[in-house]
Length: 183
Length: 218
Image (cartoon, rainbow over the protein chains, first blue to last red):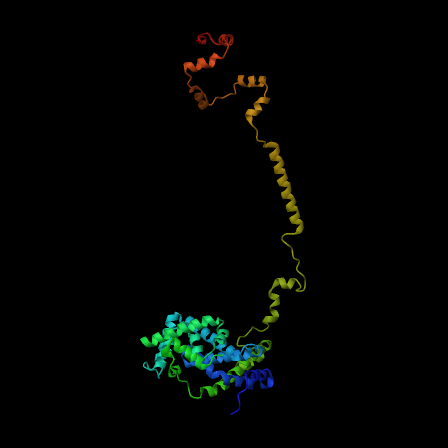
């Protein structure tokens, strides 16, 4: 197996017209799984997640030549992915003319409609609990819990202070635990 | 940089029930081979969108040639383009000109003289006329329509003219005015008070002017 190139190397290759596509494919392969799961946990549905992830990488393709390396590539990718997810959720709300509560219950219904859903298993309860959180708190919890993102990196993704993110994560974790214990 | 262990410890402190490693597994399923095929399908979409945007850019030049455009869309329609189903009477277009008399009498190349509705000269005269009318009205009003005070003007009337006017028969008393003057009530005391300041010789002189039946003034 070939050794994975660093972000700096991939960005340098992307700037060369001859190796642009190859470098971009390498970047997609490197980050697709992490971004997919981040998106999927937000949107639940695979088809929606696939559409949003394609949109994320098309944005990346169009903007990568102007990317400044003073930020980390993966932070930038998460930022784009999070914004795309939130935009998608907003569009869904507008399309269906539903309130946020209705949309959240819709996401919970999607979880329960999954063929593998098992209400007795903790991991499924956890997914239902996550959907009860407000959107931004949900993102904070998932970035920390699943992606193990440090607060200073998360601060760049969400444009929020590390202190506020820490408080948000604490609230989210407590709410989720309460939900799991009481359902 | 925080390690996974530190993040897990933090979570166990906040919510011990969530700090179980097995729970952190996301239970959602994904189609088999999704990640293997994703980069290729993404690149296909990028190429497709690039091709669309290129054809959008080229659309402007295609618009300059509608024939090429319709040939691309439908060769059948392009072939039918110049086949007309409607018939025109023979010589219709040749005789069309003679049917419009105005076109017959005047050559088409002659320039039509444009007569403006409002010429500059006309506007000048109109403005001058308005100014003269305004000035004339002002002078007329100042000359003949002075507001005068008739009581003040009586000062200028000579006593002789006043006497002549009073002696003339042109004075017509308004009944209302006459009765209103009669209706003023004077008590006997009032008359005494009024006459107390008049010297006796004046009263005697006045009495002499009165008819005999009205001379008894106490």
